[in-house]
Image (cartoon, rainbow, N blue to C red; front, side, top):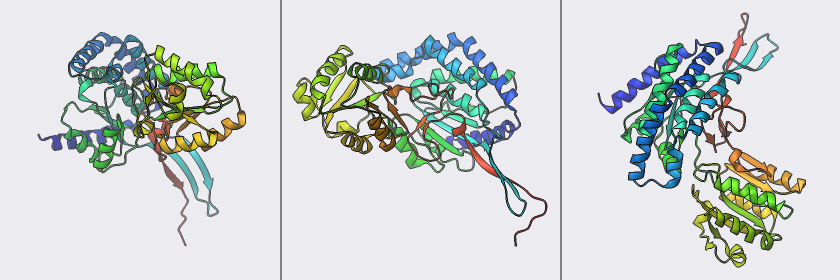
Length: 418
């Protein structure tokens, strides 16, 4: 069987699963999710052994430390995955929810009701937890899912999906609800995103290169998350000790993730007092600083920032720092160079906060908090399927509601249109 034929068959099986998923009520879905969580826990040793093989192969291949961090499955991360699945049990099932209802003068009763999207393709790199998050979220919303992870995480993904299927099948998971593409042939991605009539939506999770390639090749709709060029603006009224702590957390807690801080802008009025302590704190964390001319006058050890630095997502211990003359200048800079992901103002001025939160055109905007909170779990959504920097049909962390669409249900008693 050719790759093209294999992918068509996977799409057909997903369509059949979609129809069976539509018959499952919330109680049954929750029983299956609990069984999946239990199976992940029971198969922990096998999963970690598979992950260790992926880690060894990736180290030998020369993957960066940031990518290796994304790939690694520790017990803490396993616990987080399992808890993420279980968190979905307590969240309201959006499928069948009545969004609105009204009656027309002619007596027609019109309802707008949430329904599953159908078959969703998830393409992701390095982070094997995405396989679990995506599968669980899609299942809770009665969507069939086809997963395609990166070759660096293949062994981990196989072990994780096998565990999900083993647990779910015991409680009635419809066959082919969750499928994993195991070939490492790059053509499989093109085949998946061109399965018109079989795949309803594709969500790529990975670097900008992957997402642009998927978008260019796709025949089906794509929800995009190009990159996370996240900013913090330190206003003249900022609590500077608090600002340093927030910046350290946002940059250093996990530099290889999309909600990590990449740029810091400092108000000119406090730059002389703020930048040297910032530089010292970042040096302690082995963060390389790249600064504009004004920043380098105050901290000459900074490397010169190039024009390209302001648009780059490093996903590493690198931070670009600039000095701006005003709040308006900071907002203009962020809207021009940011990726519309997550941006923060650190300020004690309520009016400045309001202006920033209103005018910065990003999916998530913060006042006096770390951008690292941009996450479905941290937002109370349970697991997340991704963070969209699009504006349609979803924006920001994508939880259960974002994996549904809607249809209109109209009830009449013989009306005909004049």
